[in-house]
Length: 422
Image 1 (cartoon, rainbow, N blue to C red):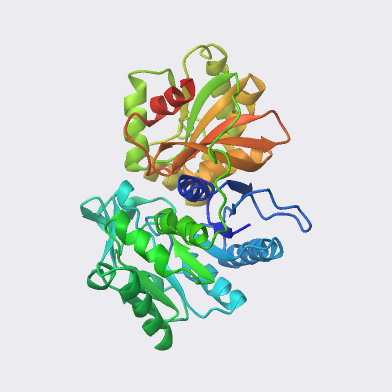
Image 2 (image 1 turned 135 degrees about the vertical axis):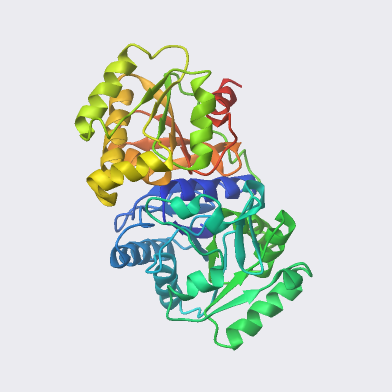
């Protein structure tokens, strides 16, 4: 194992895996903290996917440190802390507290922080995070039901979450290339800064940042900053070129989409899908019971499964999300939706579905937990940051795509299954 990574949600882990596979690294995603003594997969990179983004801070720290210890025991040479490209967090964490714990455990004293992913319209300029042409706090993320992002200045955001200090490697430095970035980070570390927010607005910036971080014990950020890491290992003769790192087995069976994300991208994807695929809406306001919601969805699926993929969605616009949270409370509303979709997933697998797309990080975590999936081998990319994977667990083999709510083109749900058709 060359790279060991810890991701704070399941779709984010898959996003990182996809980036590494694109760079030629055989990559496996492990679901949850591995058991003590669990044998590491045969892979160049292993990403431990946690559900820690919105967990209590202490739990997020403990799980992340346990994952780090397992990756260290497996021989990883470098470590990566993956969080969302929209820096999803609150003033209490969990990005800062988890990063603090990892920095301390590794004894490295410093880590860069760069969530930029220009291909998916996430850029960082002068320390401010943009989504497309909008500042983070004007992008719709200010309405996120669990981690509303109301400040685009990442230096300020991260400073509120850590006992350490946060510096900036600005665009003017990044644009000069690898040596300038490396020197700037060395200076910040020598000044006692624990973190450096690093600007990036193009893929070339990310490649340069990755090369400048060669030798860093810990890197933190979105999947984009991992773009340059495979080449670091290749230059050292550590990365083999044998076989296709994205090859997955062919599986026959039904196809379905489960959507729990309420992001603008997922809502647009559902709008497009309604014109092409059968869609069933889970209405938690009308039926605030997970078991009853799942029963209704599966009864509909019994009459709808066929040659076309089916779509079952709990996604809703902000006003409906707010109404549900007002009625049930934020945490209960979220757990109700996750539980209902996880029940639906299990029911669909029992009905012969073997190709499944899940939209939403928290939703994906609930689904893979319910299905008993313990690892994902990463395959062909559908859209930037979202690959098909081969899921292994207690049940039948399954092709699974876990999509971050914000990712993917408008026709993503249809495109995903077209790719499998060849």
